[in-house]
Picture 1 (tube, rainbow, N blue to C red):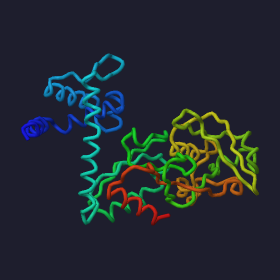
Picture 2: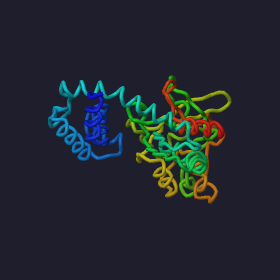
Picture 3: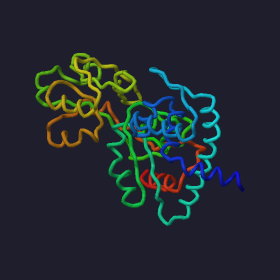
Picture 4: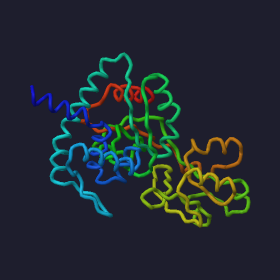
Length: 306
């Protein structure tokens, strides 16, 4: 018992934020990456880790101008601390199971388009049904590893969900369409088939991986992707819409994003018969990962929208 009392006194002296900061830096390989994953700042994490080292009187990291690495003491501490925190998380999840209402936080990584499409039906709808829940959503077009990024689940096009994940379709079918302003179409060469886009100023969307978005077409069993060309390259679909509204060129956007402009006549759809709907978005999560009661409620809510 004496040893247990000593351990309890030592733990009581440690700030939870210091332990969390230490593990975040370990898991993400540095202060900047850990800050991005946790929503904190590099300076705050550095201060917390320094406080931990001061309390324990042990140096945990070797710091250089370029990277951070664990000392031998830091490695041993991290290895021993991981399972303890895992069991602590399981204990908290077990308590959550006895609550009448789920009351945890769900961290979601989503593409910008996915976040916009499901914001009202899925995110807002879920929070209204479960007022004790919280959601922290980070929109990022890059495909992030959920576990290393500290996320509970992701939202992406079904075709982009890794095969080893559990995918729950949400939001129904999606559709990308080709649009342009009436003023542009008045002076531009006719657009009757996708091949006619070669003579157009096609507004380009740059993806997070630095590649440009290819335009997908399908008709009567024929499907293909086209790399269009244009003088304007943008990194946000909303900017593509803005440029198209201004009459600069032809854009390739989601129908949901362009709906208001189409209804108001600011944009016109072309090549409609070449851009049919396709399987849409999916909520996805790690197959064998233990879920909290809140996450289980979120998945159940998403399945109800399918």
